[in-house]
Length: 353
Ligand code: ATP
Image (cartoon, rainbow, N blue to C red; front, side, top):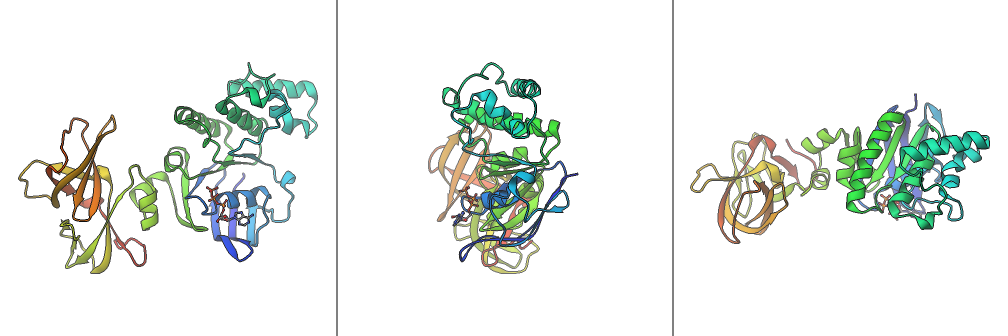
């Protein structure tokens, strides 16, 4: 049983607080993704688990043992870095087998294990090559193979797919997910890519400025964002966030968006959140529209058409059917699915419903 627990963990660099009172339990065998923008403290959190960074306050436990003072090599974690960190003068086989070599596994056994793991990541024909003779994707698989050649207590993966091209990234994503399922090793995975987070994670911890804004399953985070930051960070295209006010149970924006029947108290600085797939075009002359406004742009993505509409000063995007044909400045009626709109208070940044 290997959980990873953070209790009141703080990391300071001088006066700067990179991680602020982190409390989190990564469960045994869980795939937990730390998601957030550049500089929010993800890598620092990971490095503290690996022992590459000391904690300034608080405790970290791996499998119930407090590891604050345990040297990295005794923590039994395997890390995959964004940069791969391969040894340039070692062959692929020697890179993969290195963790076994330092553990003094006999050569024959080592060779056998390298072959096994190389087959799994489809590197078995490249074992004699040097890293510089490999593509980015192949190097990435060497780094992965080196991490999985033994079964550590925890995998730590820091943006391992970020150097790959889009196609390979999607392919490796599925492979990683499958591997983690098969190996059943507790995994902490860092990314700023929300699609990677949503597709890989059992749970996602959304980080901003050194704190966890929200922790939940991908579904919970997507369907129930608790703060403006989480609402705007998850989703592609992101949730529309439209400024306005709530009074007498109705939201109105300066651009003429009106949604009545809300059971909310008044909010002077309100933000309406609605995802592109929850805003719908209505047939002309429909009385049920929340706004009637001109089209700003139309983009065909393949499986759907993204229509951006200008309501006064604000733009919002909706996902229409791929067969939709519209022109610049054409007036459209738009309705928002009433059970799928969110209201936030600009001041507190929190949901008000
Ligand atoms: P990225 O996605 O860009 O890697 P991140 O979320 O992983 O970002 P961290 O690398 O954890 O962010 O850094 C968090 C903050 O701590 C940043 O503002 C960074 O500048 C700062 N920081 C990190 N390492 C150090 C250091 N050794 N000395 C001073 N400040 C640091």
